[in-house]
Length: 364
Ligand SMILES: *Cc1c(COP(=O)(O)O)cnc(C)c1O
Image (cartoon, rainbow, N blue to C red):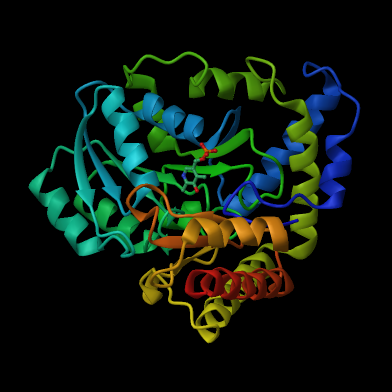
């Protein structure tokens, strides 16, 4: 099957072999060694000297972890959103009692750093800024470097970034750009199944975390940091996923960080060109088009659910539809993790053939 959704992504054979390894005690020198190796390698891919923590949970669990550790009830928060996942970050902060200022941009467009600057000047008391690096629902990569600069220039706020569909595929030098908390998810660029999040925490963030008053237990960063310092985790982790991540990171190191970013850029460019050459229109602003997911407008009049069904059942290709307001408007092709141009050709050729089939039925 050609699984071309923006997570879970295909798992290479080396990683599948690692997933089949016998269980070990998670409180053992063996586990401690694996965890230490994973942390060291993740720091390389996050481009950071900050503390690196792992939690066993979905990406959304990681977002909640970021919120409960950095935000106190009543705190003024700026939540920048360009789509479904930006909205989710704002909703989580709201659920934990933050005073959320929502700054929403049109879906398909990137966040504008100068509008963020104006907003920060208007609300000088903002304590935390939440932003999505790569918005998976609209196939947009925000100009995070510029956003980070504006946040630093205009405030002392913490910058907390959902980089779940960016980290490991798109350049994000956490320390250079001054990202306080950067969040990644296992099932995206890292070529392993869902179930782990990985995140970096800056020294500035630790100061805020020590004071934060939102209720937290499982997701307490301090407990995780202290346990990891002893080679353990507070609760039982998804040990099999640690085996998998260890193997995947080895593959990633063999390929090289710069080569991985270049491959994602190349494959994404190829996806966009190829789609257009087949007469398909792109949804996202080309100036901020994502290197990990491409959104394609549904051709006018097409039965889009049937398109995806034919694609899945007759061509063995699985793509993602649109979310929320984009449900009937777009299809999304994931190209992150274990992916080459050939996978994209197979996907788009099948999309073209399936489209002809569906449209012929419609016009017959
Ligand atoms: C996938 C994704 C999430 C959510 O991850 P889940 O594992 O589905 O909870 C959050 N943010 C972004 C940007 C994502 O791509």
